[in-house]
Amino acid sequence: MEKIASFTIDHTRLLRGIYVSRKDFLQGSEVITTFDIRMKEPNREPAVSQGALHTIEHLAATFLRNHPEWKDRIIYWGPMGCCTGNYLLVKGDLTSADIAPLIKETFEFIVGFDGEIPGANAHDCGNYTLNNLPMAKWEARKYLIEVLNVLTPANLNYPE
Image (cartoon, rainbow, N blue to C red; front, side, top):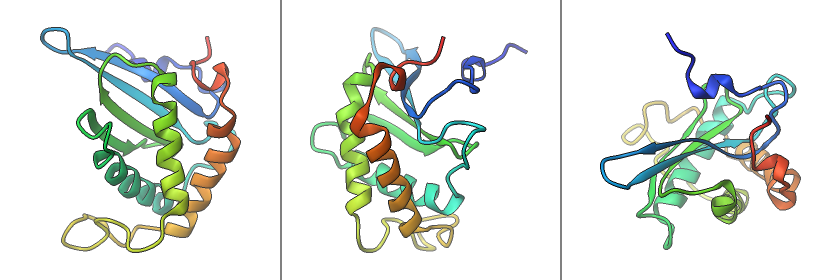
């Protein structure tokens, strides 16, 4: 079998950032852009805990799907299996720089969130007890301060 595109990225050099993972072209001219929202340097720092990542998923997905400007373009937000970040799928032929302000706004929302985690109950979620709001906020703050607030081209383009 052919190696999929995400397994061809040099993870030994990959930094935290926002990357275009792929672009899928649907019938006509519609494009779906998949973004790699990388919160951790793979294999070089501890992954995000499952509870924190699950909480980030609930908060980010809810925020993005309710965003006044972006909600109609958001297709999916979900965690990577390696627990080093998330994938965001958006309608449109977009760049990392195009969505950087939205990602910053999303993580500011997570950092400032207090209250009941949306969908974190037995009726709405398949594993609602696997949530950790304090750690989600800690991870979001770290990513916001150390990466999103100081983005450089190296944080917006995969290593060559």
